[in-house]
Length: 352
Image (cartoon, rainbow, N blue to C red; front, side, top):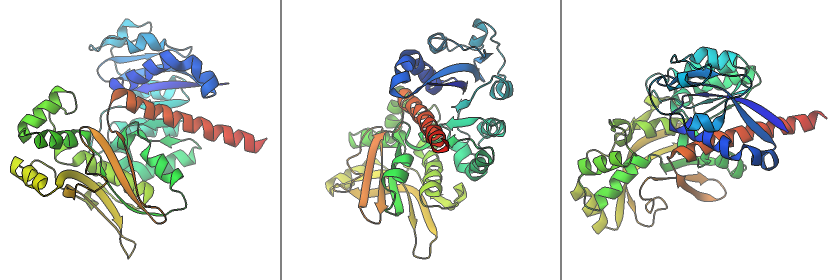
């Protein structure tokens, strides 16, 4: 049975949920998964940091109050966010990075990932910024240091869209995809179909925790834009940058637009898409699209996400699932850790 030492970088909802999963399920993972996880370091810009090579109590961490400097309440804890020290020096095998997404340059998360990979540590992350903006560099760095760099949760939280497409559709070349990749914008459109104006719908999304105080990244398509870059580069072998993806959000849609669509048997959806052209180039966009009610994405309502892949042998294959949620996204981190363990196990068996 293997024990992996884990450091949590960022301790908001996602890594806190991961700590809770560890507290509740670590014992059962011995038989179910063949490994256990020991948290040896946590760092957070707001809460501070704590390290213990012998292990921190996951249940106590999960219950830690979300107040400034709270890590100082723990033995050996401090109000300071010792990010570099925790990543480099706490003895972790795996770094779980779940800090905020910076859509401009991917920092500080990109540096966090870089520090870990340079030290020969596996990285699992839910952060779109490092992948969309510096993915090729970080993947090459991981390969040079013979470690894993996993990011399943960066696109559809706990719904394993990247791994499913790469493994389950292997042998049936993917030529494109289109998807509802932002739960907030889809929730807003669903509310507008119920008669709420755009501003009212956004307010309701904020009240339910789907939208941030500043909802721009969600409703103007910037969040989806990053996800399109990730999926296109991963599944279509594109080399897109954010600037290669045209982007238009849903803020210009009116209740009149929504009602006219309903009368014509259609629905407005914010669609992120990429397609391989005849010359091999990739075209990618984020925009509101009018979908007929028989389209596989038209029935996706509320905060649910979905993506439809165009494959050579199977035609359209559509996957839907939760695109947000703390526990769901924490599961994506666990899924990446499981993948790391399975790869290591296969390598060991091959070397016997």
